Length: 316
Image (cartoon, rainbow, N blue to C red; front, side, top):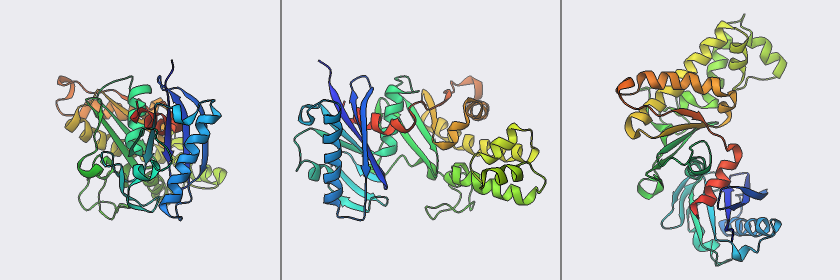
């Protein structure tokens, strides 16, 4: 008999739930608005209602599912079932699992959303079932999730695994966290846009200006589009950005030496050629070079479903 699980991916603006089988296949999905300005008990009740609706949408009685996994942004203590802090949800020291249990007896688990995405990719995505895998997401920020010996690395009180805030340059660029020189301040899509804007000012003859006029704004794609058209200024932005991304990954490889590094997030949509550029630098500069085994750098494959599948995997 097939076992079914519910994976819930909670964000500041919306939450997404999926009915997932034991092979990591999503049977059906549903979504609703989060509205975090309300009391936390109301938000948690919506989490439950969305899970119940999603199960029923897939033709499964919710109370019969094998388990529920919830992925939430912020500092999550999975053992206590609490969210210590989530700015996106306005949660501070909230007992999410205790509140969720008021609505159902289904066994429920909770984890940080980036960790859940990493677990999903490692078990059912580009990680290929490897026991040691790291997911790096290049989006508004730089998110990281670590699967080591087939377990999620959370750190003290669930506040660890924030790879985006390793320092790669003392007194460097200001990061949104308030510190300077964080990897996120150089390798996020936000940082890439800032680097592109500076290049636009410095190189008035760059093809990037035409691309911005055509698209109506500077985006994370601007420099890549110019690079692919042979633009020297665009090429410089891309090559510098690739070095920044590779720098952080080299640090992660040197500390953890995983079986695979997976890159996700908006910038990963540039495709395999971008990932290969990063991998080339990682292979060249990781400790020991070719004398040590360097993990392959691959593109994450689950896309926006990684959070749902990974949350469900918490309960498997």
